Length: 383
Image 1 (cartoon, helix red, strand yellow):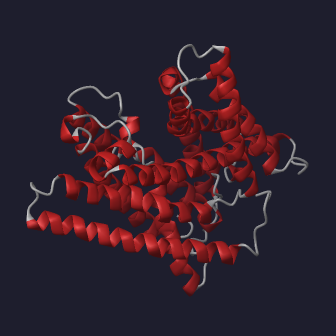
Image 2 (spheres, one colour; image 1 turned 90 degrees about the vertical axis):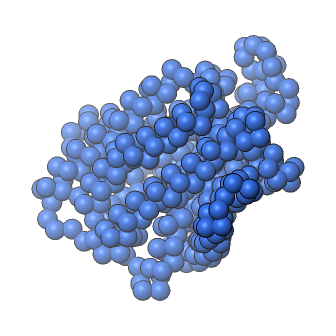
Image 3 (tube, rainbow, N blue to C red; image 1 turned 90 degrees about the horizontal axis):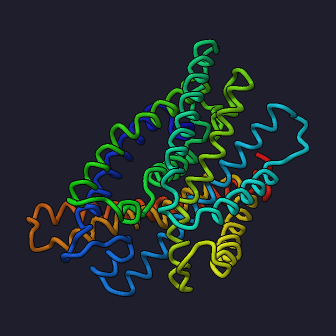
């Protein structure tokens, strides 16, 4: 909302919701293409295009999921720092320190939870923690907004800079709505598979987005262009309520990160033949070494570049746009070419071309913003 303002932010969120629902529905409709279920996005791409497309899709997925996990580590560190500031605002502990602590917590969780199916009970906790953050953030923002003087909602950029910022924000929006792992998430959905996947998508992009809309609009309304990237840094209220919300945000990020790291875990486990009991010495040592090393790398990048917005824009440009929009439309074209009318084929080709242009524009914009902001930010910054 901050780089887009009220009009651009509201329209952008709604458009991002609609096009993300559409693109994901195309992937869902191909879930049983060719008479078999494709439980990985890269499997579907490989089945339609061949081995090279399998590798390329996996590479794009990896970049996307890596940056999602970096974002979660930064969020966890920000939540811990917010708790620290509530009780001891002496600036002795910097954000990178809390990011490292968060990384250690994520490693311990990854070792204790060996595979995605073991995460089921934790998903209920994740939902609870998310609701705590949303309810507290919304309620305190609403209170602050009612009591606060008029806010500044102007977009904080020059005319030229605002163009690049707007394009970068568009890439951030599509990055926020898309994971590039719909088949993996829906791998265990019951028959009829496609019908149930579509039901889940309709729910996710209608009822599911309403809490996000609520806290986003309430936060921007209450604090305007001064809204922090981590909303709980802005809110005022009882210390115990803010502490509870920050602890919930921290714990939720640990669980959520594990979901989006699971494709990499599964790939590594398969590649190195990890089977049998999760408590077997070999398997335990593998999780400690390999998962610990992978998360250590993510933690290092998170601490090194905690000003993640510009890099998220770049990731949206080089990964999310191609993976979610260009590839989804083109795969649907190839798979259904004999069943589509000329008008439908033209529509999908227009989507491929449009999102291809958006991908290039967003990449140029992100690189320009990174270069422009490099004089302001520094590595291992305390934001």
